[in-house]
Length: 182
Image (cartoon, one colour):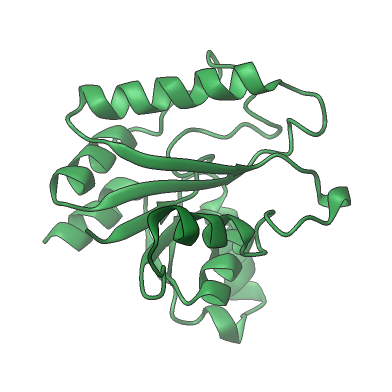
């Protein structure tokens, strides 16, 4: 089964200007849950790689994060799919850790957990750091315009990045799913 790596905020759920800090604030992007279920039903393993600096900043605690992830898993399961794993970086930029995207520590952990290589797997994100992480690990970068993706696309148009020229662009996770499954 091929792994598809998904960023969380902005790809699966709406992202406010700040952080999603509670399960009540965790609201799926329209069509994202159904898209995840379709990908899962088609045989893909869905693994989430998400920066969650709100933990380090004290904006929410581990119980809050686990509640958000339990809601995500339950919604995908209710739609007939499965989330194979959720990997998160709990650090802030100031911690200079190796797991905070665009560094590849989260992807390294996914490879170790699933005993596989992510080379040539799709990595769907809405920010430059997601795309940079994907390219650094040899994944196929996919930009969705949901979340902050529209701003990211505009920034890439204004200041092209030669390492990101192979990035595929879709309106949202649902449109990427349609492309991949057809």
